[in-house]
Image 1: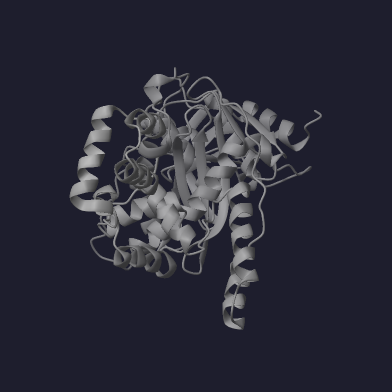
Image 2: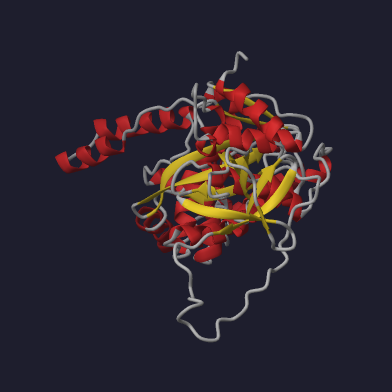
Length: 453
């Protein structure tokens, strides 16, 4: 019963001497309540039946100024953020604590659409805008409403998660304007079971170095995963018959590293099959540029330094807790093993000067005592550049250090006095368990060059 109905029933009961039992049934209340209504009517009249909170604003109601501030902040400062992210930014950076639903209602009332709105929401708001357009009273107002009408977007279909942490790591690279007009590529890896970002790295293009940095993060933080699932159009599926420069064949390099670690690689040309990394790319393109801009990040080095903190915050909010899902990660390799495994490998032949040419420079081979080791012309081996940048030469299951041969000597024995005697320095040589074998690498390269072989 609303207030007007109660008032009319009690007024008729008092003025016409009606039946209280009938009033009890009509108002669905007790005799005691009817007596209280009668006493209130006689004392105050109609005013008694007006609720005490009529016209009052709840204590937690946002003021009009606060609502206007939220709308202005979104339009002028955070316009490319989705509503959930915008709510977080309000609390973190503007000291405005508001629920996500309140923010959504405020922005919807101003005809502001979230960039991540679903199809149902878009359809509903478009209908509201069409109704406003039909009753608009000026050309300017009608034009503003027309600009707010947007198209409906389709979403990726869902797929079931894997049951184990580390069972499938989806990887991809996202080219985007991350900072101002700087178009970089963000290499990403996400665990399919937990939705946890396990690796991220910025590079100027989609590169082997970017994926090596992501893989290193995975190995250091978690261990060896079971499988990588990635796009067939990336560096992972690059094949070219008769390729000569194996150092530029990213699939061969990354694939050989994964083979040494026992990681499977699966590729697909269907984006929906790896929808988790595709959605992560969209989320990063929505959230990360705003965070980078607000943090004053201008260089790719600063962006990579900022990523760990951002990822930690992201995982804390969105990822499923790892301890609730069993892990299939293998034991973490040592830093030395990671450095040796994530290497760029290329076949080279000793020339007639007993030296190796690599990247337009000449190198001599040295043993662990720093003494030169010479091989006949035509001896084949592998030049290895480790993740840290150290250079080695593997030949006949023996690994030697490489020392660059300068174009000019720094001093002259004939014209410079007090020429210091240069003593051979001991050089670090990887142990016999190193992952480089010419026979196994050549067989792996042959398989990539000619998949049918």
